[in-house]
Length: 417
Image 1 (spheres, one colour):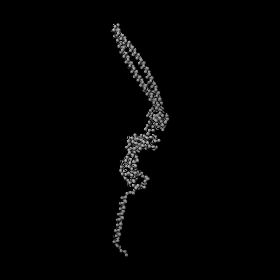
Image 2: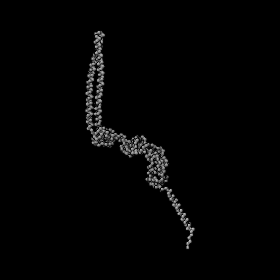
Image 3: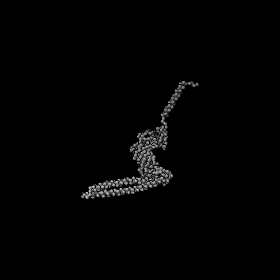
Image 4: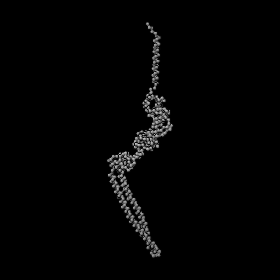
């Protein structure tokens, strides 16, 4: 028969209590340790990232934009008078010279105006000739009357002189002498008046002829203008180049000032580049540029910067100084790169997917063993198209991931596979 021992039961309970306490302590410690563990680093395939190495040396700051080639010499040919499009002779894409006729207009009223102008000019010329004849006759009559008075004056003067000589020998009385002197003086006055009348007549003739001549000149100018308008019904290129546009159709009525055609010189082109407004602040006149026509690269210079912003961009005009590659035609889409400045000795890297210049961004720096990458804070400086200056956070030779890593914003470390 077994006999119960109280001491063994007590020891067993103490032992169980100790085991329970130790187990609870272990669970607490494990829970605390697990709560302090960082989340496991995600694994990223190397093939989907874009790494780059930090370098030191010269860096060229550039901005880039899309644009088109446009001619520097463009001429719109407007209608100078109202008319109807009768015939379109040349179509866009045709090489033209200044005298080539592009299209023809008709205007019956202009033909009638031309006939009226010709008749008015003929009438004005006839009036001028008739006035010349009348004035010439009047002048001859005035000259004849003046010549007669002058002859009478000379005769009276000679008679007075003769009477004065006879009066010295008392062969003529004093009364006869005075009478001859008075007659000579009167004729002298009439002779002077006749000369003044003749001069005044000549001035009057010139004035009347000038008035009639002005009417002739006016009629001739109207006729010349009407003829010019009639000739301009045949619309000519006026510029050697390429016919680009004929925005009218046969039978269409056009008013004065309507654009009938556009001619451009394809040998002189410029590039109109659209630059983002945030990148255009450092662009200045005269800066170098390169225009990629996708069939060659041509050099250029910045000649104009549009002061206004449209759709978030500013237009920059670049004149082309190099030889144009084949296929460079107006309205061709091009890529433009403008050189802002050259930095001689700076720390730089490729431009990350996110991060503007003069800002701080978080980037993943590849570990020396290449097995992972840790997030670091990098301060960026001046930027270019493909590169950006590094002010702090990285050293020469270190590798960083430039591609979009926004999916791993919650992690400070990743593993590379």
